[in-house]
Image (cartoon, helix red, strand yellow):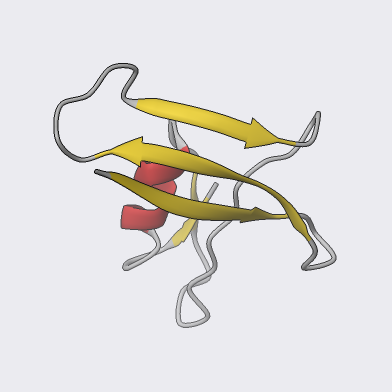
Length: 68
């Protein structure tokens, strides 16, 4: 099974998606994004930001801080 995580640009338009394997498949993640797209997940209750290695980590971090 793969989880689809949408990627948005700064204007809120869809810039692609990441397919993340949750059942041990390889490769673990497949990226389908526009060139130069970055994933940002906002937490409006935080004034801090953390830069992480991948989109899935940014999504998890956004429970606590803004994740990039």
